[in-house]
Length: 263
Image (cartoon, rainbow, N blue to C red; front, side, top):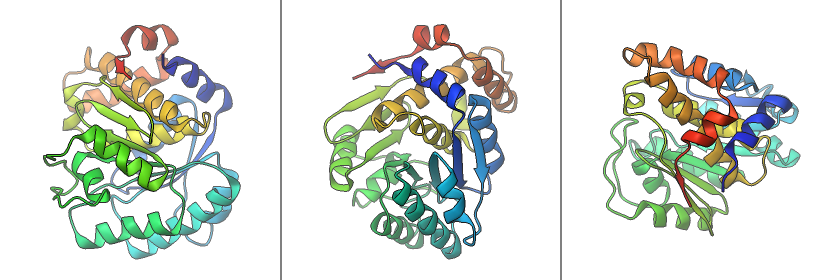
């Protein structure tokens, strides 16, 4: 059985530094969700310092949501430093499948450095897996392939853990698949819930080198908190605020009682 509450406690006790090169639209929320979990976020993008900052961190999170060529160059420098130190690198392939430029830069990162966790929605991951799909901006489009098989094949090909977020989240490596069935439909009405999920995965990967367990545990805790927040939220705006509070107050009893996973 996945022990998500144990990893939550480890994040709070160890307070890992999580270095981000992330989406400018959601950077504030990503920093806050990591802080609410008890970890320490740092948002450093300048290529002149990213390698030094990554060397200080316990995990690196890359998110191409608002990518530029210069940012991708900085991501490669940071990830190379992380690879040298042996710390986990999580890549959110945000918007993959929308434009050729975005696709090319995703593949450029994946070819230049070792990425330990690739995260995206169904169409984003399908595109990275080589399928001919179209992503609508950063919103998922329908994918005909079996998503569990798709995730496992990509994980084998890239020797990594793959996370597909959606109504049911899929976390897979070459041997295992875990489904996370927590969350609330209102999350889809908030810009940034996917980016925040990536940051949470990064924080949990900093304290657990089984990245399937880390990613699944992070998603469970994040989405259980969203369910708790939804009970008192009046709409998407108040849901986001309540989510930060719910994460901060989350305890092992709530996680163990409410987690819905399938392995």
